[in-house]
Amino acid sequence: MKKIRIGIVGYGNVGKGAEKVVHATPDMELAGVFSRRNPAEVILADSRVPVYAIQDAEHKREAIDVMLLCGGSATDLADQCPYFASMFNVVCSFDTHAKIPEYLESVNAAAKRNCAIISSGWDPGLFSMMRLMSESILPDGITYTFWGRGVSQGHSDALRRIDGVQNAVQYTIPIDKAVASVRSGQRPSFETREKHLRECFVVAELGTDRAVIEKKIKTMPNYFADYDTTVSFISEEELLAEHSKMPHGGMVIHSGKTGAHEHVVEFSLNLESNPEFTASVMVACARACYRFYGKGDFGAKTVFDIPLAYLSPKDYATLVKELL
Image 1 (tube, rainbow, N blue to C red):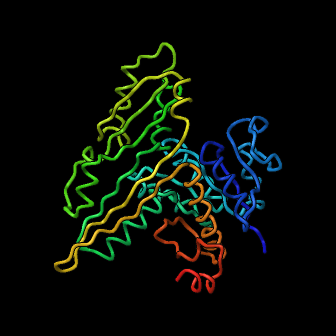
Image 2: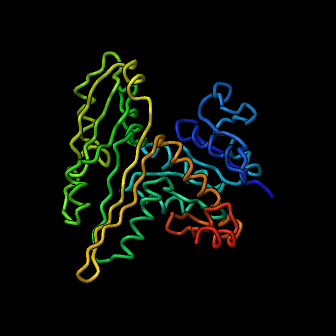
Image 3: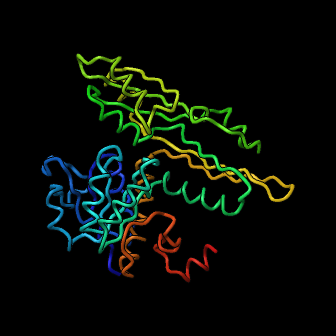
């Protein structure tokens, strides 16, 4: 059986996770990693896999079946995804929810002869699927999404992009009182800041004005402006010692009713490694992307467009027998 040849763009946390996942996936092989850094300085877990400069990707079109775009949503993917989608089948985990509609349009315009699956992590991604299913099954109801407690890669990346920030980690923390009220079936109405807290640990560069950095964080739209946010300045040593792990998780809870009967549907995740799990979702979507392309079904897609069977390496008869 021909293996799906995977390329990885970006060798940060998600890129490293993707390398592990692809190597553990029998129907795929890693054909190369593309980086903005000097390829000679990028050390992979598997030294047999070639590393290329990102600008050389256009010369590798025949060697890659699906490209996993593992950059950040804050600054990388808005430009990278349309660029790569014009040349390759691509999968990304763009997670700035407010900008997904316009992002989808820009990628779709570029993916004329390829398939591009966007926003394919766990939220957006798996949680998006759960929200759609719950609302379809129980239309008389309300869906709530809680994230954490855990490290948000996108928000942490946004912190590190601020001038004067040397390193940073951000934790998203659900407010227990809010979760409890939803699970009880009360169907409360929340302001954004009533559901989550955001906790930031920041290493500032020497000589920078910490007050300016804190203000930039707390007023950042789409990330922190609508939340109660705390900012703690710590040393690089403390950050590495206390905040180097990347757990995350969350839950989608739908509270609805049929007639006089109340129902609560809940889907939850408890993740020891946010980037490795995100990479796992992307790799499954890469299989679907490859199948869309094989049928000549091009353009940008979301998880709402993917038949569930496209995600699995198993054939349809086996899925029906074992999982239905």
